[in-house]
Image (cartoon, rainbow, N blue to C red):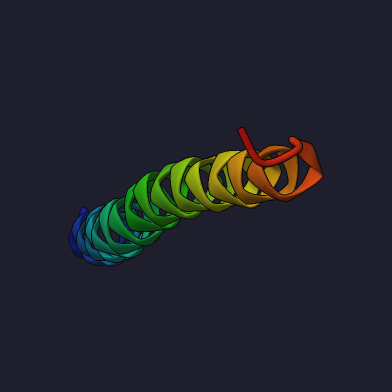
Length: 62
């Protein structure tokens, strides 16, 4: 009985450790997804600005 209780506690602790590790990894992944979305948005904004500037330069003066 004592042996089974010890094993149970070790497995329970190992599962708790894995849960904590997974929670940390999930938070890191969430931050990376948000950061990637922000960077993508910024890149698109800058590309649009570049395109606008090129179009202005190509138009003849009026």
